[in-house]
Image 1 (cartoon, rainbow, N blue to C red):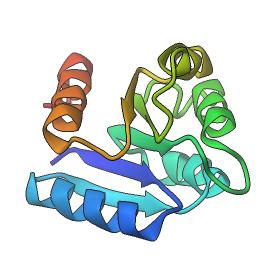
Image 2: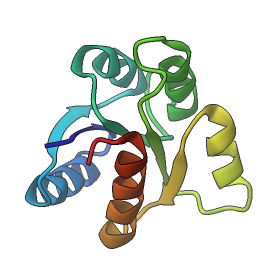
Image 3: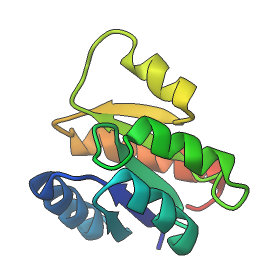
Length: 125
C-alpha cells in the first residue's frame, strides 16, 4: 500500500483529504507545517508527498526545495496543492521541484489520477 505524506496546516483540509485517501487504499501520514513535512519525508520515506504551498514555519516552496536537495528524499514525487489558481502558479511549483500541481478545493478524482500517474511512473503501483 503506497504511503502518502500530506503536508497541510488546515485541519479541515487534512482531515478530508486523509480520510478520502485512506478509503482509496493509501497509507497516510500527516505533517502540519513545512519544517515537519521535510522531517517526516526523511523519517517516513513516503511514496509521494502532497505539499500545501501556504504553510507556517517554512512555506511549501522552501519545504519542497529542501526535500529535493536531500539525497534520501530527493526522488520522492511531490504534488503542490494550492488555493491559488493564477497563471504561472504551476510553473512556480515545477521550478520549486514539484512534479505536478493541483488546486484547492481538491477535485479528488483529478488528484487521484495525478497520484496514480506519478506512483506508476515511480513503479510503486
